[in-house]
Amino acid sequence: MFRRAFWFTAGAAAGVWATTKVNRKLKQLTPESLAAQAADKAVEAGHRLKDFALDVRAGMLQREAELGEALGLAAPVDEPALPAPRRSAALDGAPHPHPHHHSNNRNEDH
Image (cartoon, rainbow, N blue to C red; front, side):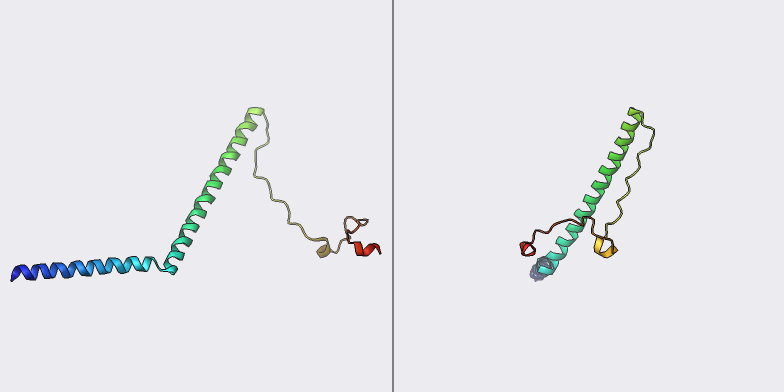
């Protein structure tokens, strides 16, 4: 009798364990879960790419400084400033930079 109770309990525990494992796996395979996993991996890849780009930039600046020293250039290598944002001439109210610019609109010729 004890043997039957043992195997019944072992079978029930194995069934509960297997059911739990299957339910967890099914939850991981839902579209929402797959989308979240893909988004997490994309963000992680973006962070790694950014870190790589920063490392390349630091190495580039270091090499430029080494070359400047080897060539005897006294000016330190600074990060170049970004250009000022451009504004449209229409927004500035300034005249068109090319006043004699001809349009390619054929309707204006007639």
